[in-house]
Length: 96
Image (tube, rainbow, N blue to C red; front, side):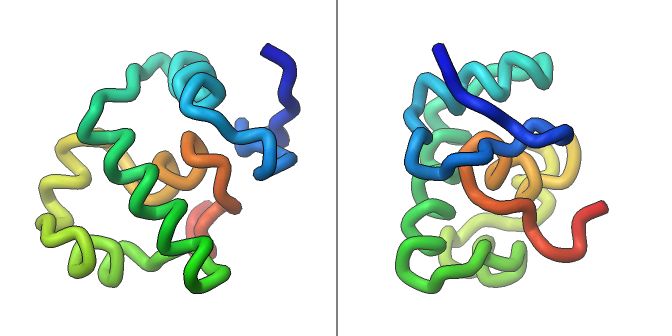
């Protein structure tokens, strides 16, 4: 699998993204992508395509109908950063 990431592991060429690349990036983070996680990734990618920006967690949870706490339980850390990282999207603003 041939793709490049930045120093934080974000995909450099968004057009290269595939579910297999998402799984590889998650694997490098020591994680596995479940069907639920892939659903979140696909929803965020759709929102990005429609709006041209990474969704804020408040908007994302409202659109998805999930509690923010649930996202933190699923991702164990900043959910939008991992959703974007594994989804081939730009790093969310406000993440350090």
